[in-house]
Figure 1 (cartoon, helix red, strand yellow):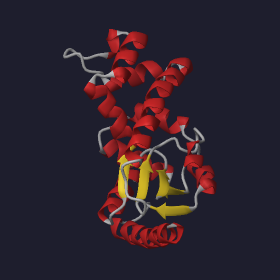
Figure 2 (cartoon, one colour; figure 1 turned 120 degrees about the vertical axis):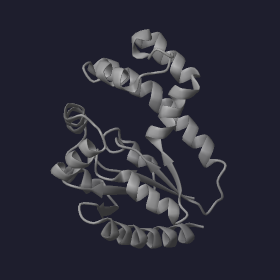
Figure 3 (tube, helix red, strand yellow; figure 1 turned 180 degrees about the vertical axis):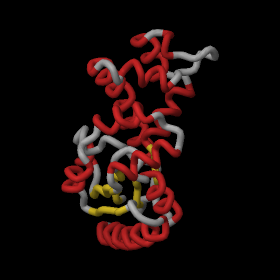
Figure 4 (cartoon, one colour; figure 1 turned 90 degrees about the vertical axis):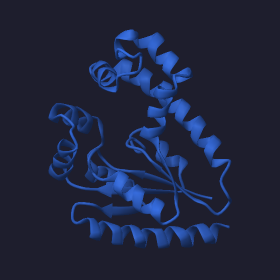
Length: 200
């Protein structure tokens, strides 16, 4: 099994690259989506968040309001650290469980924002960094409905993209057309497939 971390800064197009890789038969896990599922299933992660941060992070139906939670933790480093500890520990357990079910020759891709910042890129055989400059990322995020203030605070929490590139085994430049990005991903897949076959 080849484990690949897929990262990049907010708005860079990680999900687009992940989708192309999935279409090419990689097994893709979206860390944000898994964490969102913990909130929705109202299990251990949900219970711990409500007990620590209070019912003010819930909406009228009793669901975790992700914007309320983000507003609370992004203004307090300690609260952010606690939230990340809760969600990331549960995420790693879930990923290990899912990995154990996969065939030996699988190419597994985990899409996550903070792999470099948290040092968890070391858990993967290879790291793919998706690149797009700040202005492009900002424009894309706002077009998707993100408020400018929310984009800025999330961007500032992330390592500068130019610095993050130094950790990459592979880089996908997603600052241009979708067609150009798809060509790069196809080339990347061929290289990963060869590496996965070699490691069998």
